[in-house]
Length: 638
Image 1: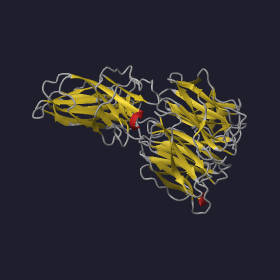
Image 2: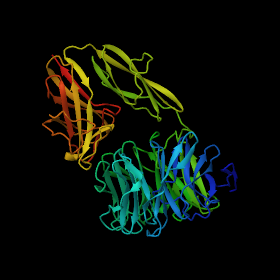
Image 3: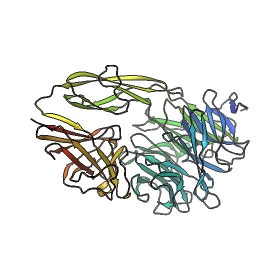
Image 4: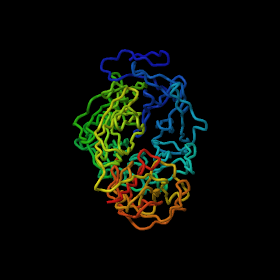
C-alpha cells in the first residue's frame, strides 16, 4: 500500500485488495514487535481524540501521535517520548489529574541489567491541544531491561509498576510521604513466594475503587496468580488468589481490564497442545471475588497475544488476538459483558495486510463506548503500523447523555429528606437538579439530598449535559403531613474523618470519604451537634452513603469524648470507643446504609460516634465533604 505525508499526517492511499484496516507510518529502525508486549497499552483517548506512542522513523525516537479520525491517519505531534530504539512502553492517561504517564523499558525476553526503565510524565493543555513534558522527568523505575513493564495508579495517587526479573515477580511504587510524588520511587520488592520461569510475565491494574491487583503467570506450577493490595494498607500487605490453575493452563500472555462494578477481566493464553484444548481464555473476577472463565479460542485456532477491551455503555466485551501464532491477521470476538461466551472459530478479521503479516494488537487501558469508539493498533512485517477504528454505535464522537436517577425515599411525612442518586448513561459532565420543578436550579452536585418541609406532591427534575447535548428525567415526590409518628430532624456532621493504623499520624479531615477496614486497622469518627429537640427522643438513625461497596457495612459505637476535631484527629490521637450501638449488613455501592442506634441520647447536645469493623474488603462512605454527607435522623415526641 502506498502512503504520503501531508501536513504532518500520514495520508491513507487506497487499500490494496484484501487489506482490512489502515496502514500507518513506518517504524523502520525501531526493532521488531513495536506494538508489543502483551500487557502493555500504547493508545489512549483524551479530549475527543485518540493518541498513541509511536516510532518516528525520521528522528529515530518515539513521539506522541494523534489520530485524524476523518482520514484515519496518524499525525506526529513532534512531542518526544523515549529516544532509545529497541524500547517498548506502557501508557496511562489520568484524565482527573490531566497527566500522561509513559513507562518505557529496553525490550528483552531475558530480563537483565544494562539499561534503566524510565517513567515520563506530560501535562496536557486543552487550549493548545498539546502535551508538554513535566520538569524533572524522566525518572528511573528500575535498573533493568525487561520483557514487560506495566503501570497503574491507585486511589491515593500512588503509581505502581510490575515486571518479571530473575525468578520473581517484582513491584515498585511512588512514595507518598505524605503527598504522593510521581518522581520519587521506592525500593522494588518481590511479591511472588515461589520461583517463576524466566519466560513468565506480570501485569497490574487499579480496580474496585480502592485496590491494586497484580496478575502473573507461573508456568512452574501451571497457574495464573492474582495478588491484591488495598490502597489503605502498608505497601507490603498483599493477599493472593489463583485465577486459573491446572496442568498446562499457564503461559506468558496476560492483558487486564476492569469495569465500574469492580470486576477484573484477564485475557490469557494457556500452554495446552491438543487440538480441542483451550488456548486463549478470558478470566473474570467478580466484584466480591471468585473467578470464572470463557474459552476464546482453541489450539486448532492458533490464537496468540490476546487483549481485552470493555464497552460498558453497550454491555460488550471485545477480545482480540493474532492468528496464526507466527503472526498473520488480527481477529475479534465479542460477548455480552454479563453473560460471556464466545463463538467457536477464528472470529472476525479486523486488521489484515494482504501483502504481509501483522501481530501484537494493542489498545487503551481505558474502557470504551459510543463516545470514544475503539482503536486497535498493530505492527506488520512490512515495518509499518496498522490500525482499525470501530465507532461502537456512536460514530466515534460524543453522544448526548440519557438522564435517569433514583429518589429514596420517594414519599413520607414532612419534613422529608430525599436522597437523589444519578444513574444517567452516556457520560454526563454536569448535573442540574430542580427539586420542585419550578424552573430554578437547586443543586449542581451529582448526588444531592434535599429536605422537603411542606406537605405537597412535587416533581423532581434532573437535567444532565455533556459536549454533545442534554436530556432530562423526572420523578414524583409525595410529602404527607406530619402526625402520629413524632417530629424528625436531620443533622449532618460538624466533624468527620477516618484514621488508619498504618499511617498513625495521618489526618484525613478534608477527604471526601469515610472508611472502615478490618478491626482496629481503619476506623471513622463522626460528630453531630443536635439541637431543636423539644420532646423525648424516640429514635436515632445514622445514614451513610456507600461510594465503594463491601459485604460488611461495619458497626457503630458510642464515643464519649467530643473534644476531637476533624482537622486534628489521627490514629494516635483518636478518642476511646464506647459501647456497640448497631452492626450493619451489606453495603452495596450507590446506596444508603442505615444504622438504627436506638436512643443513645435523650435531647440536645454534642454527640460522637465511631464506625469500626468490616472485613478484608474495605467499605467507603461519603463524608460531609462528599456529595452525600452522613445524616443523623433524630425522631422525638409521640
